[in-house]
Length: 263
Length: 263
DNA sequence: CGGCCGGTTGAGGACCGTCAACTGGCGTGG
DNA sequence: CCACGCCAGTTGACGGTCCTCAACCGGCCG
Image 1 (cartoon, rainbow over the protein chains, first blue to last red):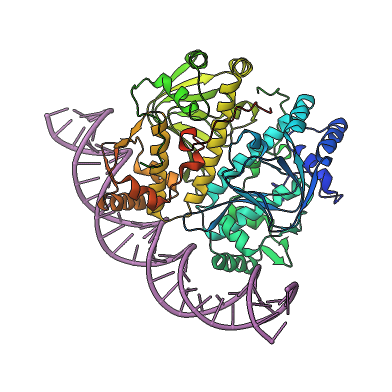
Image 2: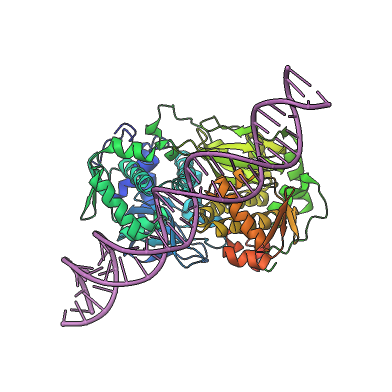
């Protein structure tokens, strides 16, 4: 697991800790900051059932959402009416930090599994950003990381089918590992093959065949929603996976720059 | 030109006005704001020759760049070493607003034509954001628009070759129209077929054949770097182009919300 | 029990990439 | 001055990848 972050795998399944773990990928989180973050997230926690939309395209901006548990996807419809998944929101992810700036959502967000989500209102966020400059910076870094991931998806979807699937699985492993939801052995993958297909710009049939090939070649195992990483190095080199685009601190040995926010 | 913005086409070729025109797509720009913006942009103007890199992947963050004249592309290399263009920066575009937040650039930017670029330093931007809240908000809106465009590229690159090229040309027409660099008749397209190919995730040969088809079908003309929009409605319907994702004010009849920045 | 959803498999063909070659224009250098 | 090389554009043949259409299976739930 040469390129996976060096953070320890999950010692606790406590979903409320995941945002803090994610943000710790960008800058250290002190105990005081941890409890401030906990207060922010505890205020308005919602349970969302799989398949329920959280954001509708064209809708007015609502709260900022932080995923505590479960997965969601951001999607648009192509001219053919087909669903295109443009991003996956995993536990710990801040979904739509800049939502308050928007007039109308340009894409929808839908729960892919049962979820727990923390909603942050405008006033609460404004107060938080005044009081917690370093966490605020980490919030923005997470947004930058999301934009970088977006670019990576664009690049990845020009590759062959095996490379696409392998690359997405590597990315998911790294992102889940960072919040303690993956180990060297694998992780829970609550996606259907239709979801995977729409995220990789492929048909579900071809996704099915490609997964079979990856299984046949001993790279992965996939059963009962559990993805097993049987040959990480093989998967990584197949995908040409370089986690630098995730902008995680533990990926690189650089010292963390303690810079103030320009904005 | 049903969906093109209602702004008047270029009455002036003055490149220094383009950022203001672009920002006016998000919120009104008063004369005082215009001159403040002019002062910000006049401070450090650089000339860049075609082919010269403005940002190198992995490099340390520099200034924020605003394109005054000419085109640049943001690109990454795939595992096969091939160049993938993930964004095009046109005159008026703010390139990398959040550059001060980054530790290392995750993609490179290279001039595609001779350019004039305004560089904004950290201190100048900080002062500007304190003094010009509405322009600052428009800066952020431009960043949101760029992210939305990024998602659209992801969706577009799953379509067929003609749809991809047509969609990209529609987008470029709309974006250039907004800064007065396109008319109903067409616009200057300083891209080689290699550039177009790398932006659409295709080979240059296929791009060549696809352009030929679009010409044969009377949708476009392309000679001497001039793209002629011979059948806008045809191009638009072929691409399934809906400019809502550009988040331009003049595309939609909504009143502009005068909201303060949460951050 | 029937329907639906997710997964699986097969046959056929369209689309697009690869390889190869050739053109014309332009700048450079002999 | 011409020769040469390079670059952008163009065209053709061929093959592989991936999509389309079609069918089938098992499990779950109404």
